[in-house]
Image 1 (cartoon, rainbow, N blue to C red):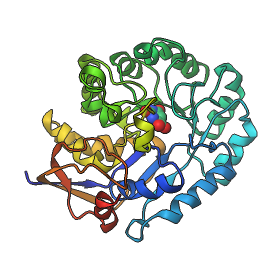
Image 2: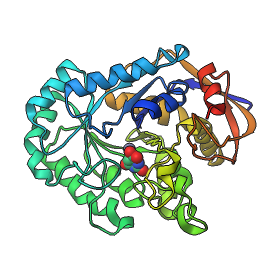
Image 3: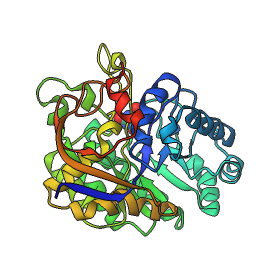
Image 4: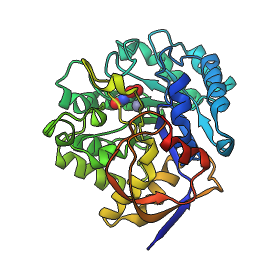
Length: 350
Ligand code: DOR
Ligand code: ZN
């Protein structure tokens, strides 16, 4: 098979940032995805309807002419200041689809995250009532770094039980126990899986020389954990769908005295996903994983847009919009057929 065509996917978890970085990365996302749920952990957080509407306008303002069909889907960040009224306003006025829970300190720009999750119970109650999705960065602060996700699972279970019709997404899962938890919890509790966690283990981060462009939260784990993720993504189970968690950082913030967590995967997201599903002989499952289950969960219409990838080996360039993309310098066996001009141009810029 030299080509594969499927409905243009949606990315249900992406960090587009703001300003110069937003301008640099947008072509990667609007060139491959019909819609993307944009994460609210910008430097000044997206925490209200007004913030979300301003952010949507900022994203639309930088869409290239060949990317105007792209639709940003909005989220807000839960903080200790979020109220039920903010939820009502966000869902009503700004059509915000999800509110994101970052336990304080677990990742980039989360120092204003939530200290005491039970203090948000009235907010969860309102989200349940208006049917806004609770999106969770599921790591327990303070636990040993490789155990943080598993240590959060009891909290997930408590929230799912206390709010029986609240729709919940456990984002970017990385462990076998998280996969098992999603399979065992009630209907309406699902998980996103990134492309990078389908291909990396901890060895690819620190097994040899430190690889700052592979460092992300949650940290990639063991081969057995990765195998469980691959199994979940390719199993035809609608509780697992794509959210790339593409998280660009300036190169100088990735390496140096400190390195920021985040894999800038958007530029290679679909070619690498196709390569991965093919490697496991599951290509017939890719459409459901990236184009069907997520939009089903979020209640969005199918898109009439299609995307085609063709089998042709290429080496991923060292820069996309001046930032180092995931897989830079390595080969891929698939590429986007007829990519938009803005996508092609970004590879050579910077
Ligand atoms: O590695 C990560 N980077 N994980 C996250 O959860 C956030 C993201 C970011 O915003 O940089
Ligand atoms: Zn993220």
